Length: 306
View 1 (spheres, rainbow, N blue to C red):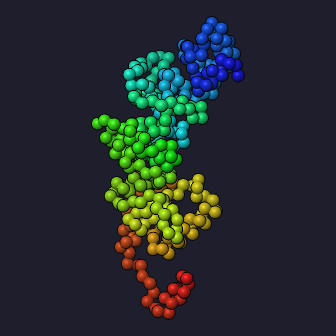
View 2 (view 1 turned 30 degrees about the horizontal axis):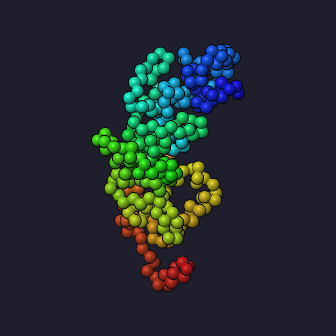
């Protein structure tokens, strides 16, 4: 890597010529690198190291940083959205016009007063608090809260840090969504299930630790344990055995365990609400729950349970 391409690399793999070429010699080296295919000239005055992420190229072309959904995905926060646009942030007072060489069709531009640049895995992002605040304002409620849950759970930011960025009358919805976020939530499956059930008005505890059982995903109305099982973490034989053991301990302690698969949760809020509501009604109204009336059998059961 030459000194010139090293400069471009420090600018995340894409740079405007005025950022890296400071004299005639530098510009000549740039032309040579482009001719040799070491660099690609994507637009007049703008060069890219081959293989640089399209999101990064778009952000750098606008002299911007990645934020919102794009930055959240770069940080490894789970999302439900399939939006492929690049979310970027620029200073509030900067004007941007679309052009033939710099179109805005695949870019969503956010204008903010506070921009704190950070580099994560070579990507030009902003501070996680700003990523979350932007998501809470821009995205739908499910994606926004899913991102907030992940950032809080990983301790990348705090509710207080995010709240400081959500001021003014246009942030009312975002602040309400922030209040819905739960640092104890460990997966997007739990987030979606929690939001779906709380929208019915149900009492839903997040990650409660129950004596003799351990930490569970969600506890609904104080007795229905709802676990959201993603295949990635529940497909091994060891985890299969652990899950069944936990279910047995839950029943022994007077709780009713229920498991939703990732496919169940992905089917949407209506499916989640229907499945859990049926479980609540079926268990609570059951006339089948009874112990044997024979005293001899009861003594055997009591002894076997020791």
